[in-house]
Image 1 (cartoon, rainbow, N blue to C red):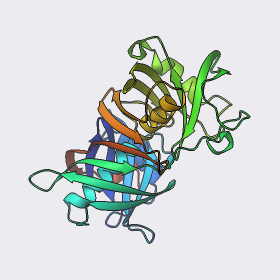
Image 2: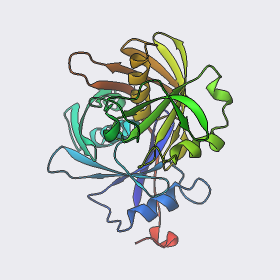
Image 3: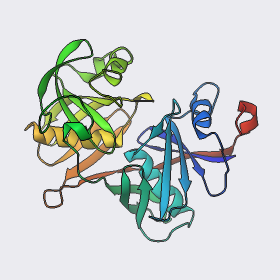
Length: 285
């Protein structure tokens, strides 16, 4: 199977042209190939497929083999993949995901290769039943709650996948995330699991965060997570609608447009390498 390794500020995936490669057990492939010691190494695998509803479909699997609905860093790389290969020539690209069709606007360099992309991520979902989170109310914003064996003020947002945002005075870089992250991910409050963002507010235009992603663990960046943090930061009165978010792998710029209600995320898309892998060596058809 031919593959391409790409990343959006360190959030790395294996990309496969689904129209050319026939992989029957995609979940098993995601588990085996994502392993950073015995596989290629990644946060998951993304198949780029034909679509009847959009220009292309993004079919995403996390490193544990679970199906992901949406990935903000991943979808920028999908746009780079199809544009750089001449699969599309328009710099506005529509990509079908399990959380709806997303529109990506690509920026290119002197060689007409995509270096950055701006993604219309849609409107943040705040209704608890739609996140989903098992707490009553119209929205969960700065709500003090018993969670993961402790009490914390949480803000819950869905960006096509569920997020729990926690603002902290403690430096997030000092958190023992491998210990506390799984407790949040599997807390009974979240029937579908949850991505958890731990955030320090720097000023009214800047925050820093670390993220524990359901199905993948800690990653260097999370695009949907940055959007959830942008919404949560505004709703809690910490920032305006536009802000820079520092993640371990780099920066994202997010803007919550007041007129449309949509969140727009801008960040890089980077090619790492390409190669061939023998799926039969992993027992994968």
